[in-house]
Image (cartoon, rainbow, N blue to C red; front, side, top):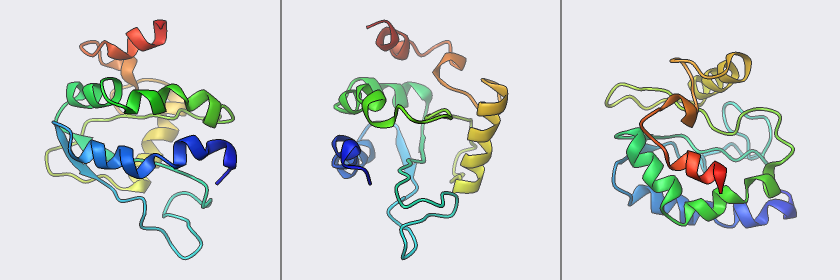
Length: 139
């Protein structure tokens, strides 16, 4: 992992633990489970960091993202990930009890990159009832 991204990578475990204790958190794919070379099932690079989680509602996720220390990490994304050519976030609806996998997540991310917001894959702007992200964008 690049030393430039240390401010992010040094906080991954702490932020994941906070998420797991947050209201509305349901489940998280443990990205720590990688092969001997550090790759997961979808990403060829050991330097790829991803989070895949499910929440009871977008409002719960919104509260975690914008009203905890996670906000400080998110605000540093341009410093650490300015080279990204794809979206850095994709959301979609899942049925209760479903645990999405990396292949499903990659499909949703690729769809959003190609088609933009849709009911199949979307970002904050596709959720009119959550507003904290808009306040952040304007700050």
